[in-house]
Amino acid sequence: MESPFKPDILKGKVALLTGGGSGIGFEIATQFGKHGASVAIMGRRKQVLDSAVSTLQSQGIRVIGLEGDVRKKEDAMRVIESTIKHFGRLDILVNAAAGNFLVNAEDLSPNGFRTVMDIDSVGTFTMCHEALKYLKKGGPGRGPSSGGTILNISATLHYTASWYQIHVSAAKAAVDSITRSLALEWGTDYDIRVNGIAPGPIGDTAGMSKLAPEEIGKKREEYMPLYKLGEKWDIAMAAVYLASDAGKYINGTTLIVDGGLWLSRPRHIPKEAVKQLSRVVERRSRDAPAGLPTSKL
Ligand code: COA
Image (tube, rainbow, N blue to C red; front, side, top):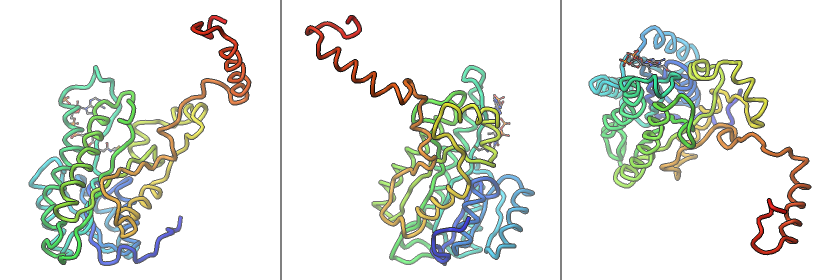
């Protein structure tokens, strides 16, 4: 799909994306590149990174691939330094690296829980922390006029509670909290905007095939009217919006991009029955003697 944004909306910007070699991170890298940014993508798997880099290069995007694990502080430091060495500055940090698997809470080991917290929450904080000196207003490579921006990829799992996702729900709740705290502290002190994006189920991603195999998706469609898959493009457009000057007054928010899915509930009464039923109940309660519950009428 064609972007509704001008192709130079991110011209001159440098973005670093963790988890940028595949899935949503890769699509954001692609769209940032198509809108004029230079991109550094970070990931654990060399092969995945190499193939992502050559795909991006074939589209004329300036890109480097940097191997690293967000769980390791030395990797975070090295990747950020390499980005600066290569492109001279850093404007946008996207924390898209994440770990996930379905598991009953009772079958999840504390180490399994910790692993996802380490990748999603601690990894996000580590990357932000190490990138701070380059993102702050007046930092190396940037002028005194403005700071950079951070985007944290989150989820909607923890808004209510999600089956078999105790570790990821906890990790993303922490990510949202990090987003707000940094927006407050670094927005005030360093002119850095910090926002998040909470994607719903996005087709053609590792998350989707791991967490909601096709059969489950079909079943949900039957009782959730809003149930439909999003596209990676939807998330990338939200990222372009938030990272560009179009979002210059947005700080500390996590934008839900799920088509309204998290609000969905199965209907408990058919639509046709509501009006009639509600009138009857009202009439009964009007005619009822005071204090008598309507259920007794
Ligand atoms: N069910 C239950 N526990 C699991 C599990 C599963 N499916 N997969 C891993 N674990 C547990 C392991 O048993 C281990 O705990 P233990 O030492 O108590 O046995 C712990 O998690 C760490 O597993 P390990 O395989 O060593 O971690 P890893 O660093 O190699 O992998 C994951 C990290 C598990 C998060 C892996 O799924 C991953 O890297 N995913 C990245 C890609 C991804 O998931 N993307 C989707 C984003 S939505």
